[in-house]
Amino acid sequence: MITVGMLFRELPRRTNGVFMSYLYMARAWDVELFFYTMEGTDFENNTTEGKFFESGKVINRIVPVPKLTDNHISPNRRDANDFYDKLSKISYCPRNRIAINKFQQYKMCRSNPDPRFIDCIIPSVGVNNVPELMDSFNVLNTDEVILKSAFGMEGQGIVKVTRLTDKYVLNEDGKITEWSPIDFQHYFRTRIPKYWFAQPCVNSYAQSEYGAPFDIRVRVQRRNEHQYTATMYPRISGRKNSITSNIHQGGFTVPLEYFLNREYGSEADTVKRLLNSFASGFPMYFQQFLDKPFFDMGIDVGIDRRPDIDSPSGFTFQPVVFEVNAFPGSTGYLGERTGVDNAIATFEYYHYLWNRYIDENHSDYVGLTDAERLVK
Figure 1 (cartoon, rainbow, N blue to C red):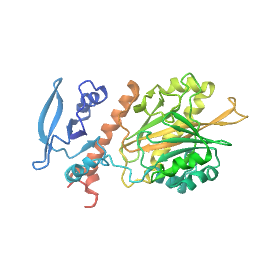
Figure 2 (figure 1 turned 180 degrees about the vertical axis):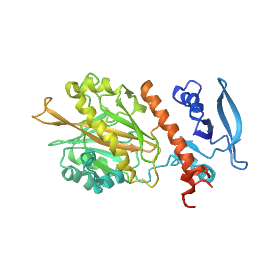
Figure 3 (figure 1 turned 180 degrees about the horizontal axis):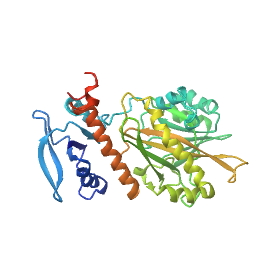
Figure 4 (figure 1 turned 30 degrees about the horizontal axis):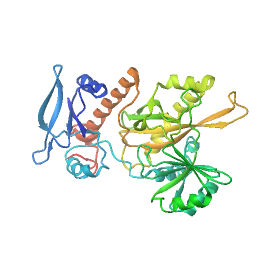
C-alpha cells in the first residue's frame, strides 16, 4: 500500500462529496489517503495532523509527513513559499506552478506552432502605454480588443474596448461607458499597469436562452507519463454584460451535451468533435512549454462563431484558448460517470509517481539519476 496526503489550506468538510469520494475509493486502489494542512504540519519532527477515513468514521491522527503530497495549495502564494521549501525536501509535490505568465503562453504557442492548434491561439500584443494601446487595434486588425493582465486570475481586471468612428466604448466588469478619443486616452494614461496585453475579441457568446458569455473548461488529469483524461463542461456567465464566464463572479455550469444541443442544434456533433480533437492533443503540446510535468490543468476554451455562407448555420466554429491554469481547483460539473473517471486517473497517477520517484526498489526509480530523485 502507498501513502498519499492531500494538502489543503482548510480541511474539506464531511459534506464535500468530491473529496469524500476519494477517501471511499482509496482503499480499492491500495492507497492510504488522508488530508492535511500547512498549519497542522511540524517540520521539526516531520509530522502532520492527518484526517483519515476509517470504519465509516473520519478520525485525526499525528503521522509522518507523507512522501507523496497531492498539493492543492499553489506554490505561487507568498504565505506558502517557506512551507513548500521545507516540504519539497521530504515529499514529492506533483502540482507545479506554470513558470510563464499568460502573455508568454500565447507568445510561445504562436512562435512554436503546431498545425493542429495554430488557429486555437489568439494573436496577442503587449500594451504598456497609451500609444501601444491605440496601435493595438491596427496591429490586430480589429475594432474590438480585450485587455488582460499577464498575471490576472479568475477573470479579474479584464477590459473590453470597442473602437467606433467618433468614440470608444469600454466594458469593465459589466459596467459600460463611452468616451471621446481624447478622454479615452487621458483615462488610460494613468491606468495602464505593467504587463498588460491586447487580443482581438472572440465571439464566445451563447445565442440560446442563456444569452451570456461562456467558455468550455477542459479539465485535464494525467494518468501516467503519456496518458491523461480530459473532462469538459461549459461555464456560463451569470451576467449578460460580463466579459468572462468565471464561476466566482456569478457563473454556473451545465452538462456539455445539453449545452451543445441547445446552442448549436444540428451542428452540435460538429462542435463536439472539434472540442474532442482539441482535448486529445493540446495538453501534451502545451507540456513542452512547462519545466515540469503537469499533474492536472484547466484549459478555458471559447468557441469563436465565424460567418460562413457555405455552412448550414451560416457559421463555422473554432475552439480558441482563453487561458491555461496549473491549479484548476474543484472539478465543477462532472457528473457521476466522468467524476469516477477523473478519480480513477488520479489514483493511477499516484501509483505512477510512487513507482517513479519514491519506491527505491522499483525499476522506474532505479533508472533515475541522483538529480532526478526528487525525494531522497
